[in-house]
Amino acid sequence: MRINSNFLVIGSGVAGLTFALKAAEHGTVAVITKREIDESSTSYAQGGIATVFSTEDSFDTHTKDTLVAGAGICHEDIVRMVVEEGPKTINSLIEWGVNFTRNNDSDSYDLTREGGHSQRRILHADDVTGREIERALVEAVSKNKNITVYEYHIAIDLITESKITQKPMSKERCLGAYALDIKSEIVKTFTADVTLLATGGAGKVYLYTCNPDIATGDGVAIAYRAGATIANMEFMQFHPTTLYHPNAKSFLISEAVRGEGAILRRADGTAFMEKYHPLKDLAPRDIVARAIDNEMKIYGDDSAFLDITHKDPEYVRTRFPNIYKTCLEYGLDMTKEPLPVVPAAHYLCGGVLVNEHAETDIENLYAMGEVACTGLHGANRLASNSLLEAAVYAGRAYQHSISKINNSALSNITVPEWNLGKATNSDEMVVVSQNWDEIRRCMWNYVGIVRSNKRLERALHRINLIQKEITEYYWDFIVTSDLIELRNIVTVAELIVLCAKQRKESRGLNYNIDYPDKDDINWKKDTYIRKQF
Image 1 (cartoon, rainbow, N blue to C red):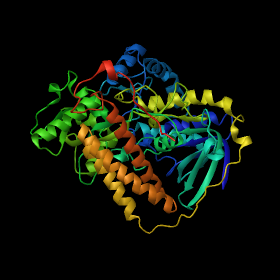
Image 2 (cartoon, rainbow, N blue to C red):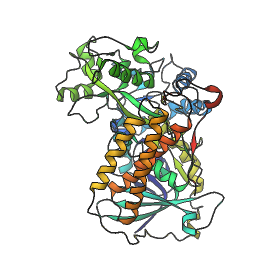
Image 3 (cartoon, rainbow, N blue to C red):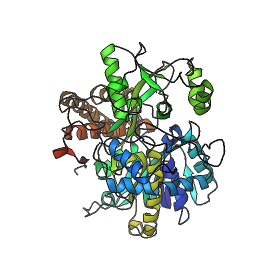
Image 4 (tube, helix red, strand yellow):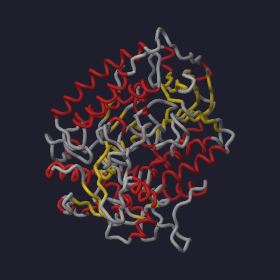
């Protein structure tokens, strides 16, 4: 089955849906998404979206805060571009119906502060900002006749010109993607003039993550297999404060809780952040995550504790209604007792390398949001810059890509349907679940918050063995969504390890005990990796 459109969008978070709404003004748009349209990483973003909306703030200050958090390898031109386009981009979201929380006078927006920010510049919708943005965008998409959404479809691989023609090209071109209709178990051929990767992150590569189950690094993996350059994969951000409870599935306690005055303590009640950073509990996330990890190891505690009990209970309940309600469901009242928290894999600062227009080095292929490496985040993302980046780049990709409509290679090439070959159904899904678990444990133990050369070597050895087994299994059996995701997480795991092995220093989110210092002479730069064909 073949489906043709002007634009193919893979993913349905803020990046994908913002692009789709803009692109629909110029052509037909197909959006494929692994689950329901509103099941995206965007929906789980609690804190907010950073931008300069206050007269007390400035573009220079936001830029400086971003550069400091990025530990020296942010691309300053990109940072300034995203920061300066922020207010205009936020106003577009507001026009689409996003209801950010206002102050009591209702004429101004309530701006909060998070770790690493020197000013209050975080727009939020209570403590469910991502969910509110997603709601408004989904509603707008549902009313647009030029957009067709394909739920429960998972991309398998990109369709590229060289694979079809079997001829080497000076520059590869993307023609669309093969995707599995999960419910019907049919592989469909999606062709398009422009293909956009907006698949989100890769937190599920790790054993402990606050990401949704869909975050399996699909976009990075399929772009890498197609020949796109991948960058800075060693910089996986671990969110410092994920709720530690046996019945809680990776529930994130927003950075904004510390922004509003919460204090991190050990089990004995001792506050500890002042010995790690001048900003104490408002230090950048990499510092806070390593501090918690170190305190737990030194004192043998199972968690740290986030304490906001000194604030007015009514204020806490009003400012963080979702966090308060969810914690109560687990028997924890954050107005009366500190919350047990641990770090968990949260945000991938690297990804598919793109330029200022979200272009990859494969023609007609764009990437944005967490799947992309734009140069904004450097070695550590500043809190609440991610939604901003996704929305800004969606607009830039739209402006750049419309010239490619009806001007692609599709008119001259016949794209074949998916070839099953001799693949058969498998009744050994235990192979998938076993490998899935082994990869995630391996990454957590060897490629986590603190790394070493020996740990990285062990991880690469194990991952290569698992990868060989998965490759053999993949080509023998008919594809399923579980098998596709497994293939992707092992690919992403390998890329993280290979980039971490390249970087002979500790910077931002990459801390290696064999290279404990930052090396600006040799390593004030990005790491790159590209598949050799």
